[in-house]
Image (cartoon, rainbow, N blue to C red; front, side):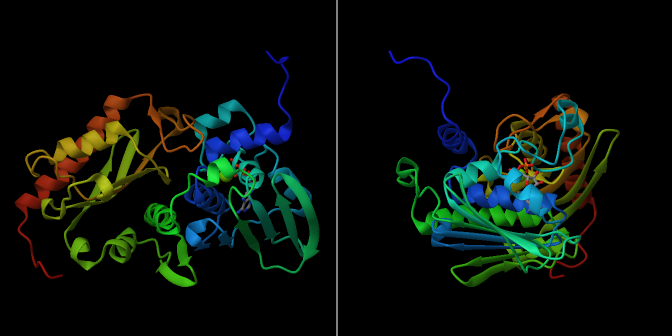
Length: 339
Ligand code: ADP
Ligand code: MG
């Protein structure tokens, strides 16, 4: 046996990176969530080769002060929480301070950023966790991240990446979910130089649904409004006619965060029982808002999982909301089907 020793920082960062950064879409998720947390109203995401050789994310958010730039890449460095109690009232998508250090550990990263208060911007380059340069340059307000050659220094990881087309398709579905969960932000998504999606950021969830799913789905959706003491629900569900054989159309967001959760899926699907054939799943695009006390988002580094302190009440509320909406639809005859 070898002697017990603490791993060096570079090795620790590379191991930790594995939890946060699995593939190009994980990088896009983390950087876009940072843009959202920075208060951006417009975010452009550009990828080449499925994100394997280039990911570029530009936002018009708050930017980072020059003195703070290197600190942003330190593991567990964050501006979003200060103490563990803050987790109970978390309003940002990020809070673990792990994304930038992880991404920089396994890629070649370039950051250009400028805050409204500073006269010039900053350009910072960090590769494989090693700082290469920090200089002042002219830049627009906001932040741009360029991530080149993901896993260039971790061959074991890059081997497991799929084709550019497949990796690109993961990024595309992620961008769709981000656009659907944030209709107040204008998202532009460019793949190999071609604009694939451009949402207006006009706050209309319905408009984003139209852009992503098209006219045929949009004319078959019903608006959901529900509120009780601890949870509110807004969004759209599909009429039984637009169901599918898989859950791809069944999406929901908690406090602006795209998540997967068995309780919520079950509540939605149970409400549709009697409206849908077995093994068919409904269309849903729902925004759930609830207070941090009832919600734990710190389950996994990727934050796709959540836990509820009152899971059965979450179930009941969502079940009720969906069932009411479906029943109301049955009672009121359609005015015009071609609207
Ligand atoms: P977290 O999001 O959990 O705080 P990150 O590693 O993703 O951790 O980011 C570290 C810090 O860098 C953030 O807390 C934030 O202050 C800053 N930051 C990252 N991206 C941006 C951005 N696009 N605009 C402004 N600040 C940013
Ligand atoms: Mg983050």
